[in-house]
Length: 291
Ligand code: C2E
Ligand code: MG
Ligand code: MG
Ligand code: MG
Image (cartoon, rainbow, N blue to C red):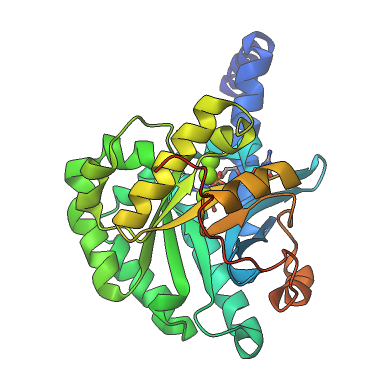
């Protein structure tokens, strides 16, 4: 019968589908379920201003609390979400979650406090993005100035012509823009100026290698150029006191990293808001540092 034929066809596929393809399919179904069943969560990593020695903002980082596999980091599912066309939906979900959270924390937040959200390249291709973001902010009563949008250097490079208008729309809303993973895309700051961003995040690979003369020279140059362009500089992935001291010597504005705080569940954030965890310093440039 047709029913048996269908069953046989199914068995044929089942037997011949390789393991990778099956995992691929189940990952896609599971990701859709994750979005529907609220299995995604947002963690928040403090960004510390070295002059004030305290948290001035947070980066929102998505996590997937998988019912069988436990807590998954973005690296384990974002590449799939990109492949299945689900990443823009995840970005939107994260922004809405951040807005709800911001309302909860609002009374405790220091003035000027912000939360940074990562956007994927797919989100940048959505022509309705500016309106959608405006709607989410408005419906939650969150001022645009409380949100920073992070875009990686390579996203900007690959989509330069298409994103200029979109970024202008975001800035007109009052959002601030930040270039993530800076230094990995080999673009010049002069070129990136056209995007009118407010901050640069130095990729953690340079921070990791700060002990080497070359990496220190690159970081020193990035900090100096950013200062001339009046951009805030955030060093990512600061793990050791030695790295912190080099960054202080270079008068880097802000740090983010495990040394200070890992990404935290929302309940752990309020305790970090007013704590002074890095001794305040004037972050004056080291007189011995190259100009
Ligand atoms: P990113 O935006 O560069 O975020 C910083 C990553 O560095 C985070 O990894 C953070 O946990 C990690 N990190 C922070 N401090 C340290 C440190 O001291 N040492 C080391 N080794 N790592 C540190 P995470 O949370 O696994 O996120 C990885 C990437 O996933 C992010 O890189 C971002 O590109 C992407 N991502 C995260 N959330 C979202 C999201 O909501 N939407 C999109 N489109 N991408 C996201
Ligand atoms: Mg980021
Ligand atoms: Mg980064
Ligand atoms: Mg990254």
